[in-house]
Figure (cartoon, protein in one colour):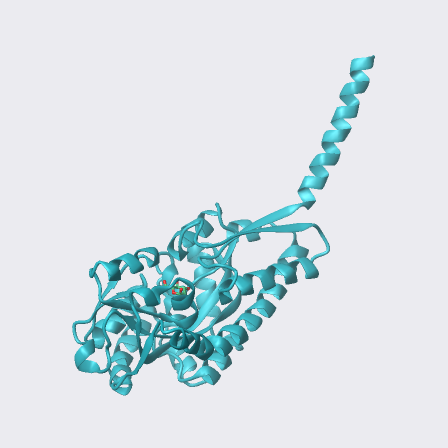
Length: 326
Ligand code: MAV
């Protein structure tokens, strides 16, 4: 008798615990940076907004400073639905799974911040999002970014002659290497966490990046010369693993989508607004020397046919035309 009662009691307890656990959701995020970087601040904002929008219990476990690797690692994790549930990714780091996604992040795609903002505030990029979900199992919940990418190198690169043969690191998407090859440089795809050493040891002479990340990861120590090519305004999707997202209750999915949109526009205002400031801070600290680049128009001319060919190959000519026409 006694043992039967005990059994019933523990079964009831087990049920209560299971029901409670089913409501508790913990999502794990990843950032390559510390708390100061715009990406981390944006992910914190995202967490805050999801919690606010959602009625149930939810917790976040955001791992910083590249503890879980770099973006090219996160992509695989998101695809498999392991280790990382949400993060911010450069489209060019997702090329392994989706050939078309890097189109939204091509150098020289946007004329200026207004153009970039207009495209990101529209639904022009939906076909690329659909392909990413289908091919990579990655859901875009919002768009942040807004940093301007420039060349950062051990020696100054100030014109097309100096750019010729320049050994520089680019992100993994083929379109990135094709773009910089067309300008005469000698690009190679190297993992982000190997760039610092590769420059230090002379394997490459530089790379290209935005101010926030050059500052946060102290790339200026090995690449103190910034050449204002201003070739990219970054588009950085806030993403989730579809395997995880699809398993969440619908009201949480809705809370996430709303939070992603809002955190994205928060992050875009933040990073685009602080881009010049970050450069100035590094100048003032004696960390970088900034050079004008004489030849940006020539670069643009050389790159456009490469963009056209890439879009044609993807069957995305109409999309590229729509983006350019906005
Ligand atoms: C910057 O840190 C960010 O744009 C990040 O999203 C990229 O992955 C990285 O550069 C890079 O160049 O790989």
